[in-house]
Length: 449
Image 1: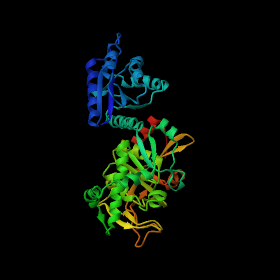
Image 2: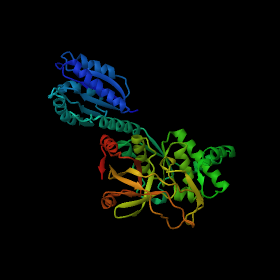
Image 3: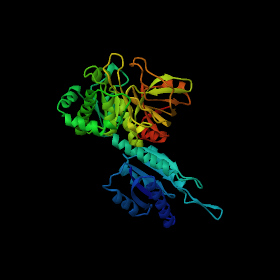
Image 4: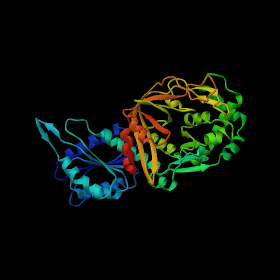
């Protein structure tokens, strides 16, 4: 539950019971949206400023990620600022409630007189805030308030997040790199690299019994289209335990491995089953090929939606859709039906355990964080995923596997293609654009559509 402070304001000459009731109803509606609130209301502009002191005392020492400034009636700006200035570093919601209809007439406490007096002041003071207002006869904007509070919680988590990176710059790719200082300054996560040698050293210390436990308790859940070699299962289990131990010790919430030039080339083992176990059993965000900003995008999406935030990459563009899939694995959370695998080899690479599961379709939000000359941007687009036609990537042993993927219908493929930022995009289910917009607004990141 996102934690927020809720402070309700109303002018000292407005009937106090009206202000109390409006604030109470507003707070209760936010709790139904899943927010955990520190509540203080009503705060008036009383001459002795007793209410302001009451509010500051109530908030002192409390932990929250955002401040909901609920305007239940006209309030002189100074009374609001004297509270908000103590929390100017917090993202804020300026929320104006509204009046009501009584005996055929509008009754108002001048809520929007209050918000319109305050909005520019907040802007001038440099606050990070979102302004929403209710309208008589329409549903309250509690969903928008809750969205911003969840985004504020995500921003707070990102500030101290840690991403694990085994190796760096797989295949000497350019678009998967990151600039550490600007990433820390703007968004917060640390990308910490470690050597693949450490994985191998830990792997060599894992016992056969420990590997067998993973095979029995996790890998046995998979549906195998063909029997895999016992040594492949042992390697998958052992390398999973080795990487998981590193992530547990260092608090990594995401992980990427040097894939083609690392696991496959040096260790002779394609890492698809390792990623599957890390995602499904350890609950980590995973992406191959040392994709730094891909990992960070996953964290952003996971914090906002509580979804697995898997990656897909693009294989073909069509007139009204794109073919997006993966050459290795998808998390169980996005699998439609059984987690299905098979042994297979690609080109000159060693045989591994390949995920060939069907991917869930439906409404999707696709995101990619990118960096240009020290400035961060988020490319975001909505689409609709459906089962793709039968397809294969040339180079797999025949009969070629049906790789996991979706045909994603877009409103404007050309606009998407001309703004595409990388081969890897992070997907979430449903329309999550407002959540992403709120987070990017808090972080000062421009959105590209």
